[in-house]
Amino acid sequence: MMPRVDSMNDTPDRPRTRWGVFTQLDFRLLWTGETVSGLGNSITVVALPLIAVEMLDASSTAVGLLAAAVWLPWLLVGLPVGAWVDRIRKRPLMIACDLVAFAALVSIPLMAWLDALTFQHLVVIALICGTAAVCFSTAYHSYIRIVLDGRDLLEGNAKLQGSEAATQVAGPGVAGLLAQAFGAITALLADAVTFLVSAVCLKRISVVEPDPAPDEVRVPLRQQISDGLRFVGRDRYLRPMVTWGAVINMALMGYQAVQVVFLVRAVGLNPAMVGLLLTSGSTGGIVGALVATRVSRRFGTARGLLLLQVATAPFALLLPMTTAGPGLLLFAMGAFLVGIGISVANIVVGSFRQAYCPPHMLGRVVATAMMINHSTIPLGSLLGGVLGDAVGYRPAMWITTGLVAPSWLILAASPMRRERDLPQTHEPEQTAAKS
Picture 1 (cartoon, one colour):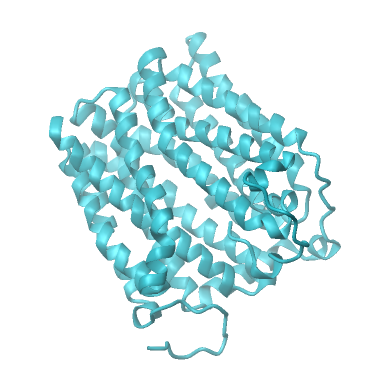
Picture 2: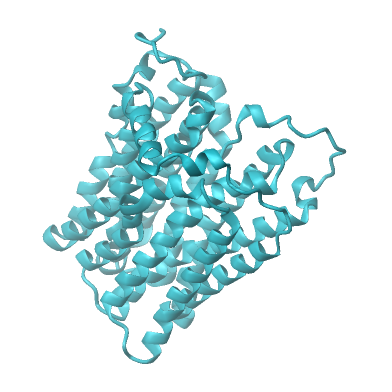
């Protein structure tokens, strides 16, 4: 989450040290908990499909359904949770979400050891963990501001985002190695423990969380939700951005839902190699985070965003060309370049939204955008899974990556195609884009 400009200078200057925000115990606890649980989440992305494929002989459609179940809660409860979180204290909710996820994931190894594990059980657990993730993520973005003061917010967010990107690189590889050495069930058990570590770290944070503002409690949830939807739906910049996000998420999850089955059954890879290849996209995400500012300064935020999407999205078509041996480089290169483009887009769009939206509307706008963008993820997962069974794994990869390649046209059709930089303030009466 990017900090608001108006909150950056609220705290008097203090002497800086080489360790920065890491000198603060509360931040170290928050960072440790989120880094460990982030690693666990990355392990789950690989471990759950492997359990379904290897232990339950699940079909491609079933694997797609399992992936969709993780994201479906964003569609079902995303908007009300966004408004509800503003009315309650954040830390107790986050701890409860961690404990629920821990208990849910532990139940999978337990059922497997009792020889009672079913695919239906995996789907229920995916729904539970997905709902916990919706509540946790929404509260977490607000709680960062409570742990860190205005002066340290930017630095703290940078460190949290950096560790998140690193765990996305390490997680699939760790999952693959654990699954290869000890089995996918053990990999999932390691994930469950990470949620317990996160809960303990959150419990030890000493900062006093203020009570929710009375005004937030009195405003009806329906009104808050409607305000956010109207703002996004009527804005000529936010509307195409959210549309692009929804389409690209559906396409990305379409091929990601079938890619594990594709790599195992069509290409013939073992779990360790699958995990290693899946780190390519996250590595691209780290590179994208490093170059986003430079690209925006060189070409402008609007033009740079478009140029990078044009230059990276078509490389998704390398993924279905993957074959064993040297052909694995095609998958690695395609995922890496697509990861760069998505990472830069997330940073540019997020920063634009932070500066552009009125402060009193920002929370609702963010919740609305996240709900719409996440709502297409389960649809994409189901699409990829059904296509895998209906037409084959490699053709399914061609169809879904074929949606990624031209997705930049949605942004090109928006007013940003005529501008170098995205606007910094919202002007309701804007009627024409600057050239």
